[in-house]
Length: 232
Image 1 (cartoon, helix red, strand yellow):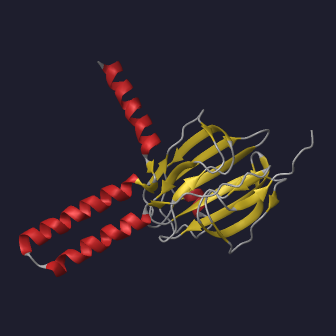
Image 2 (tube, one colour):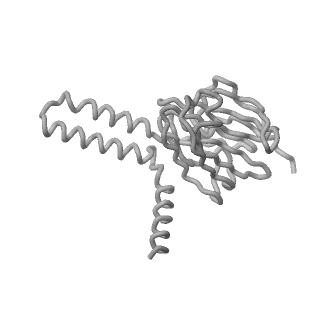
Image 3 (cartoon, one colour):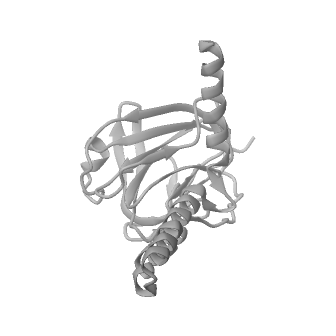
């Protein structure tokens, strides 16, 4: 019985990961929209006042818009690393890590950005690590160390790229749709962070930086770095 329940839970998690992103919208938007639509219907049924149903209807429209998930044209050039998120580049610099020098790009997502996260490269997920933490303003550099976050490391062809989904002041839920061992494509949807957040990406030090601080990027379509191609 316990084994059957365990298999059922694993099956549910797999289905959840595979269906979380629907065509052009994350399914949460549909649930929020439907829920608020029901609230508006109940208010109208009990009061008959049209003016009272506008707040929940407007909020429903906001959620449907917020959870949009537009298709993106994924770059196909050799060595290209795409942005894992929509937003503004707040930092673009070389940093020292326990694995040596890395090129770090930090992207801040405000509440008006698309919040779906995408894989920056094609490869195999080698690490998924969730860390509890606080909810400091994601614009502050130290939020990358202290805030709640999920780290995802992807092993490419002879190199690896890591990204962090970092919660912010409003963002209180991180969704990660991949697990260790999953094979992902460049630009593939891998999760989202809700209601304002930050995404950091660590690239190999030899990558050529393709963005500057203050630049706006789009997840899955903006090339933020390019690795030198080794001629065979």
